[in-house]
Image (cartoon, rainbow, N blue to C red; front, top):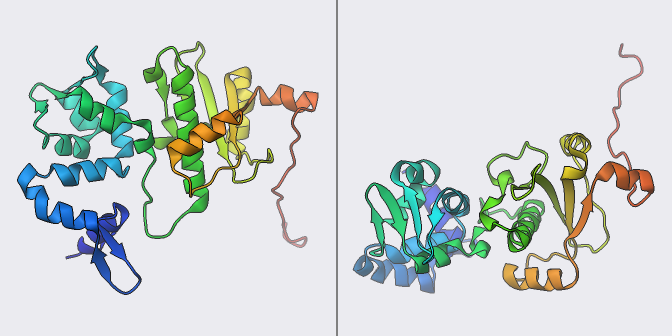
Length: 268
């Protein structure tokens, strides 16, 4: 019984149920899943969960560790698939075109549907919208896609902040030696104005020219991600700032301290 509120929250997140503030009401797609899913072995529910981004992190990790062959199909050793994407692997096993023996094999059309980069945008983690977090996720997704599009090998671009937010950067590109480390900033305003944490500042100085900041301006949470990405890149985004120390020294960027230590004068 204690799991019921969590399950209902997931159903609302994936838009199978809607909450009007007083009642929970099943949606049109919810009716379809509820009445037809048993006929196809749970694949309607599985596809819904994947498409809404609920397992975005597991999708990304599986695509990074698996091998894509010339037909576009994915193969990944069984134990590795279960380690990096346990729930996603369980969902994929419902599809007839997926085999799961010594390795997980997913045919090309499902890989394409599962691996579309726009499905990697994490779903909201609760009923309350965190605008700052959602804006940041959009910016990181845009830079992840931008770097993959311009990389010699897109699989070597990693969205590392999805697994560890303490690194001081969000994306790393292993196509370069040393690897590029990229911190992403997104704003609804077109002015170049962003904050760096103490950790980001220290890492930027430590890495020098191997650290860069991507800035996406004019971001709106109301526009579908793919359409907005195409719009923003056509406007010249992301703005890329590489080597913050040199940019600050040359006057290309300015920095303003925003934190101060306040103590009571009679405390020693």
